[in-house]
Image (tube, rainbow, N blue to C red; front, side, top):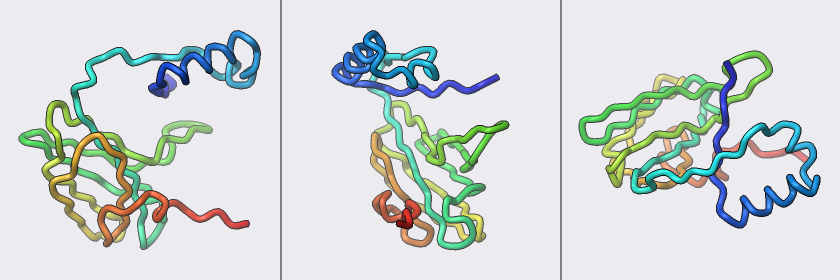
Length: 147
């Protein structure tokens, strides 16, 4: 079974997309997209998203394990590049924190064998984490495009 990618759009983005869909401006997108979902759910829950950059081995940190602890809740995830034939997963990992306004502790087990711990991470943000440096801007860890 395939995966569904859900994106949350603002009202102006949704209107622009719907207008483009009706008027044929986004034909290639229309061919690929079967459904657009608008999240009307409870927005009082919190989250964090992590994008990792490794210093040793593969720079995209594929295979790196992450554990997020919030109160008594422990969640684990691993960076994966693909799940099936001709597919690509998002290399970022997303954790729902529920009502918690921060992650108490994030433990990262890098492929190099190093273990890094980051404490008291504020919720509702995207973070870049570089091996051995902790939280950095995502631009610092993304591979550089050669011209």
